[in-house]
Length: 452
Figure 1 (cartoon, one colour):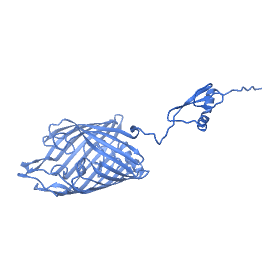
Figure 2 (cartoon, rainbow, N blue to C red; figure 1 turned 120 degrees about the vertical axis):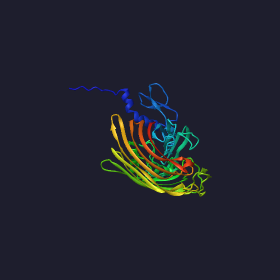
Figure 3 (cartoon, rainbow, N blue to C red; figure 1 turned 90 degrees about the vertical axis):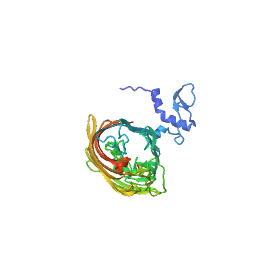
Figure 4 (cartoon, rainbow, N blue to C red; figure 1 turned 180 degrees about the vertical axis):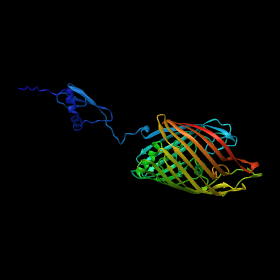
């Protein structure tokens, strides 16, 4: 015969079983929960809920009313802060070190040692489901003249993305942002393998940015693909849409508008992903507008100041690009043609002249226990104007570069490169030559980048 013992539930178990009823009683019993914390007590005999202590009453918990409509998020819940810095050393190992010059890097010149090429701070985030903001400053910029090569604060980006649909496939970008042209212009210097952009593409929009309005469209799964190409370390451009259309001032970053004419730009680029996981991107771009150059007196041999149409000189170009992403072997190429403001042979006028040029780059991504290694070889050429330089002189560039990027940790990148340069020094008109000097030199360049 079995004996059964009547076991009463413990007080703790009774509290657990009363949790739901406690909440219901609090509501049905008219208990008002204010914005301040409210204490609830339960009678251990009757299991009734009270808002004040008393005999046989034990404290349950504290409750606080939350109104999601009025509760404000902290800025840190909406915006993020990040950035990167590039520390460089350039050394001319043979050739004409005195006259060598490169518009993309002011530290390539005589009597230069160490330099901070970029020191970027980015503040960005989604303000709402339909609006995101992006603000980037550089603490290492310098003016075009005056001998200052860095240490000044300058705006690089200041734009808002306004999404037109819930999937964020259609958006309008307004403010200061990159001009959607080509590939390297849109590829961040933080992600680029080679130390500098190729001249032929970069001259389309020096500093890569301008003030205007852009429209971007890409299906949601392609937007994810663009993000993956950056996140995975494959050196993508980021999301600038499958289709990009825009209008912008055309005078360049942080330069005031000088005519009543807007540049127009259009870009188409599609990243394919094959069954084996290999990415391949191909696209085309075009831009058109009138650019107002800067002109000063030239001694050739007598002093003369070039003239040009006051409303600007025609600036048109079109280009194509193709990228086989390094998985592990990769190829990248970009080429463009057009016409742009250029100083004529007699140095009397700045007028539209033909341009052409581009680059080819091969690379190989090797992942090891010591980090990722990406050796590369790059060849570029350019024949055309240097429109952002005073008097828009003609530039001829023939350059070969080999190097390797080592990424021991995600926050550190080291690039070592050797370049054989043959380029026009567009900064100085030489009266004795009745033109600009062509310079040959070999350089060894080292860049350390830290990401934060």
